[in-house]
Length: 336
Image 1 (cartoon, rainbow, N blue to C red):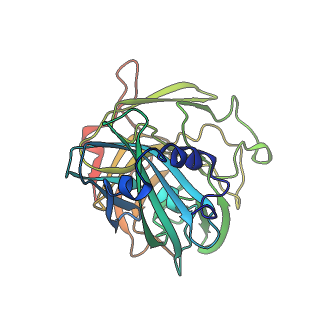
Image 2: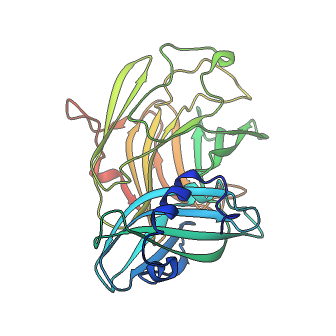
Image 3: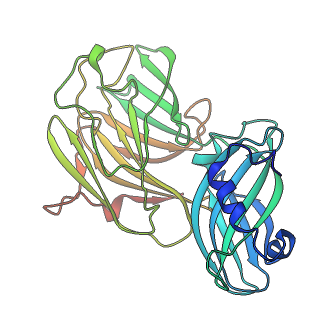
C-alpha cells in the first residue's frame, strides 16, 4: 500500500487520518465499492454503499496498478444513509487522459468517505478494474457557396483531436489534423480582439470547446469576447444524470486549404449535453452567415453513414437574445 500511494500527497494525508483507535480494516468495513459500470457515453459509474452508518463520500482516486501513479483525483459529494447505495460518475473527458483506446489499463479505484460519528474520522474502499477509453466523434460540415464546395471536420470532444477535410471542384484534400482547445473551469474567454490573418490565427483549430463547470446541475453563464463585442450565453440547469455538458464555438472560415482572415469563432455555437445513459441533448445557441452548416453524431472515418442531426440553411441567422443573454431556442433542441 505504501508503494501504491507514493507521491500522492493528498491521498497520503487522508489515509493517515484514518489511523485512529480503530484498525484500518474495521474502518473500511463501513464502506464498500459494489461495482464499476461502463457507461454508453464512455465514462464510468462507481457504485458505493455505506454499510453501518451514515457517510459522506467526498474523494475518488484512480491509481495505476503497476506503478502506483496517481492518474486521476476528483472531489465529489455523495451523502449516504446507513445501508444506502450511491454512485460517482467519472466522465469520459477525464478517462481519455488516463486510459488507452485499446487493451485497457489495470487500475485501483479508491474512494474516501467521512463518518458523522466523530470529527475527522475517515473510511475508504477500493476495487481493481480494467479501464479503456471510448472515443466519441462529432462532425461539422460547411457548404461555402454551393453544394459543390464544402469543408468539414471530425473531432473527439473528449480529447479535442480533430481531422479537417476540404472538397473543392470534386477534389478532396485532407486530413489536416490538430487538437482543439478544451477550456475547463472558465466563465469567460477572449478569442481575439480583431480580425487576423491566417498566419496570426489565435488557435490552430476550427473549434473551441468550453466545458460547463456546473455540469448542468445549476444555471451557468459563459461570456465570450471577440472583435464584434461581448456575448453572454445562458445555460440553464437540466434534469437527469449528466456526464458532461459543453459548448462548441466554430469558425466556418477556418480552412488550411483555402486560408483567409478569421474573426470570431462564433459562426456556430451549440450546446451538447451527454447523459450517462448515452442520450444526447443538442441545442443551438447561434448559427449565422452565408454558409450552410450541418451537425452530425456517431461519426468516425466519414460523415456517412453518420447521424445528421440538423441543417442550418444558406444565409440563415439563428439566435434568441433577450436583451442580456443568448438563450437556447425551443425549436432548435434535438435529442439523440
